[in-house]
Image 1 (cartoon, protein in one colour):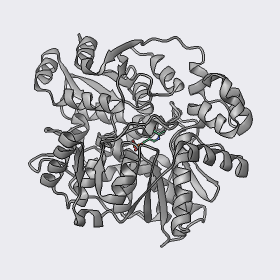
Image 2 (cartoon, protein in one colour):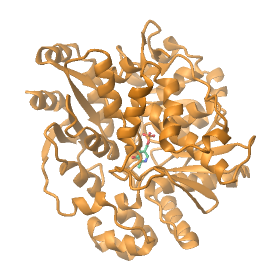
Image 3 (cartoon, helix red, strand yellow):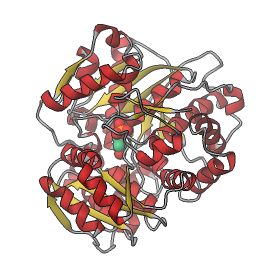
Image 4 (cartoon, helix red, strand yellow):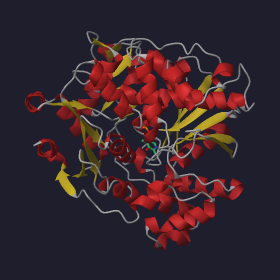
Length: 492
Ligand SMILES: *Cc1c(COP(=O)(O)O)cnc(C)c1O
């Protein structure tokens, strides 16, 4: 399997090279030259545990890894760092199946991919004879940062620098990051929003003077952002696993379809579901849920992607995004794997902040439907699900939950549905608890852990108890125009 660039047909690299580079030269994203067939039945899959499923899926994409290398990466990733052997449990509640993707070290779904990425990356470096130290440069809207820090901390041959929007992440998210230990880590607050952080990372990656500075010093950049196929491929695994579990439990039969609802920020998670469907997994609709930054909802409605709008800070901060980077891969595929067309649209996004797809392309979006939830609707979903079932979900999952309810109301579609549950309610305690009872508003976020534990019957996860009295180790803040300097400072 070779990987091509969404913007340049002449590029052709192996999986390990695509993982190492992160972003293709010229700013495109790597895409598989074709989508492989799953080639295994639900009945066979239903007898496999998470790690076996991961191997079956990932081997189809990472074809230049040996079996030993790939199994080694999987073993080291999905171990006791997760608080359940199942890795990604399915919980039936309120007429849907919540796929809990938050049982890793940082209690958000980013752990699913970032637990394995460092191993894929260091294995790729070895395979390609790379001796330079790998520098991970990452922009985060909250959850990627900590998950990447936890994954890379003290991994030999790597360093990691994380940019987060100062004031644009939750107090728990910020504390998780600024208390990160490790000799190879740095966390920087940015006076700007997530898009400013992400644009700076892209710019630095493409900057040639930076490239020569890096070479001189014996460093090479890579990315832990969801644009890296080393993040995307491991995310396909849990959709395959979830559908196999539904089959195993007798909720679906051979021939049935499953809808998937994913709350979407950078479009990585839902894109993985799209690939799973194209591999032959019996998926029906892909319901793309947005918060009030509903640029994707509008895109699915109109075929126009327009980022020229107010940026809204919501109670689901990990989705406060106006440029969904991974959408570029979908654009490329619906254009018929046309790099020239994709490059043209991405140029108009860069210069004018918007683009419009053709009628042919729009017709190929029929698998998708967009929905969105306001902050009020998000809170109402948390409250009603809790009151009806006792199950407590976080604000991000609640956006998806509300979007799913709305979809069912509009269409009457009764297909069994998996909702990606992307964060533990412990990560957004204040928003979650005040949705249930406004009288929690007076308490500080971290002081609410005991209340949430009592209400939900779920023990306080280690990720929260650890930061309650940890020391702040990172307090640097840079202006958004000065992020080049932040990188040079870190590497000098
Ligand atoms: C990152 C994140 C999302 C968005 O996922 P994308 O892959 O960027 O679409 C949603 N919810 C939570 C909790 C996240 O951390």
